[in-house]
Every structure is written in structure tokens, then in C-alpha cells.
Image 1 (cartoon, helix red, strand yellow):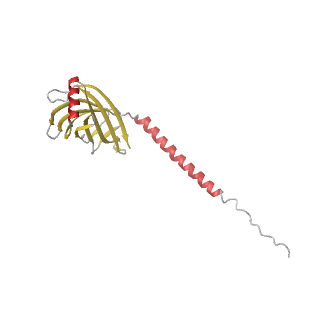
Image 2 (cartoon, helix red, strand yellow):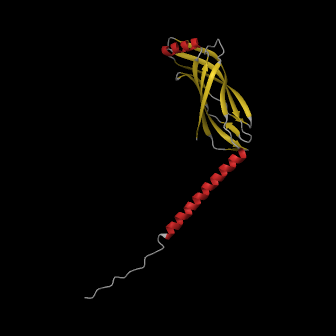
Image 3 (tube, helix red, strand yellow):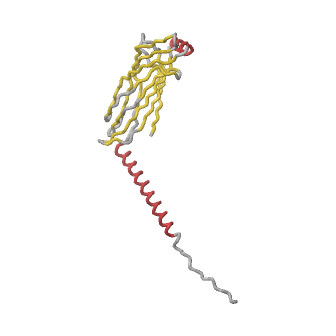
Length: 209
């Protein structure tokens, strides 16, 4: 028998070309999006020149600081003056609901409160008097440590502030984020009989998107 010739079909040379073209168009589209976002960010920074707001505790007063030896609890009632500065010329700041403030001593909460919801305009400094109170467990070891700190005139206190904010450009509010501020204070006393003097303060802040 003679050999049969197996028919050969031409290969489809364009089978991979369509995929390459599609991938190329996708890459170009993504590059356009990245370029547009970069241009928008550059425009925002050039026009609005954003600056970070600053926060500080400028004053503190204590109305009650009562230790109960029967159940080893401490009832604290105080007011902290928080200074918020918006240094921007064209950006306002909206402070939303759901803020939280805590004052603690050696990791033990003393009292808590919240900031008011308000809008802070351009180049504005606002001082808020934050009323805080609470009753928490306060063991004899902490009581002894506090007495020693009082005698030395150096009482370390932590102030934690967490507040949702949104930047406002004209009449448009941007996406809301949460700002967390940790203030480490050293005061000379926590007694209601004497107005505390803030001897030193350090601040750390971060933003949750």
C-alpha cells in the first residue's frame, strides 16, 4: 500500500496576537488611571497646600479624686482643655460623632469622655473643655505608687484621644478618617485641692483610613 499524506493545516498565527493587544490596552488604561490620580494629587497639593493639624492639652483641672478602700476603686472627675489648631488656608476640618477620650495612670483608666462634633474653619484655633469622669479599680499598689509620685511632684498621666474627621474643600467633605492622639503628660499633682501644673508633654499621632 502507498503512504497516505496527512493533511497539514496552516497555524493560526494571530491566535496570540489578540491576547497581546488586549493586555497592551489594559496596561495603557491602568497607566492612564495612575497618571490621572497622580495629576489630581499634584493639583491638590499645589492648590490647597495641606498642612497637618496639631493638638495639645493646655490645661487640666480636677474636681473629684476619691479612693474607696472598701472596694479598691477610684472615682475621678476632671476637665482637660484640648487645643486644636487648623493651620490651613483653604481646608476646613469636620469633627464627627463617635469620638472618645481616656485619661489613664500607669495603664489603668481613670476617666473618659468625648469631644463635641463641630466644624473648624480655616486658620482657626479652637480650645475645647472636655469633661471626663469614671470609676475604676485602683489597687493598693497603684495607690502607693501614686502617693510616691505626688511626693516627688512628678505624676505621669496618659491622655488618649480618638476622633473621626473629614477634610472639607469648599462645600465638599472628603472621606472620613480616624485620628488617634496619645499625649504623655507629667503633672505635679492629681489632687482636687491643687490645680495641676503640666510640667512636660509629648505627643504622638496616627491616622486610620
